[in-house]
Image (cartoon, one colour):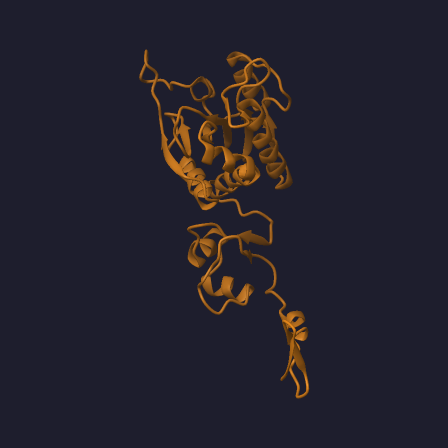
Length: 264
């Protein structure tokens, strides 16, 4: 597998970033980054972190660590994790001028599927030189594909609550977005349905036909519920065990309802 990932936990050490509603940005970005790191590692994808402790990093040292990990720019993705502030609500992604919007679009689609409100994906040009990126983590990490992910606004009570409860899910969402962007099918046998998913979109994602997906999961219709786990690899689900546990009512059986017994 040629893909390599570098995860940057925004802020750290003497730079706490933003804070509000019980969240300190430097801590939340590190928590998200660790979850993301473990998931990429589990999938066998080479992954590195600019910091894995509460450490102060200057912009130069942060960028140097990114470049020190990997010398080649081929198939390298840099993900810089941040939490927003300033009165808004929802997630947004900023991507480098040298890259296209597809990865950012994927990330927001995945986050939306987990119930997060979506703002926008965009590029921001430098004020003194519009040919360069405004943010150094995008500008100075050439030639890698680099994105800054803002997961929500910690000074918004709704976003803060979602971040506290769902940051692990959001981390996995970004991993899923990267895999989909690179056309990598994970080894997992199951996929958890997210908001906006259809049988067609899931089947396409895992190189299946809709009929095959339905067969694997003994589905008789196209109804999907968010959170349902679908089998996407291997053999079809064995429903014989559940059938064997079904009890057939016979004459003379009774059922209790409240304080009353009824003969069936």
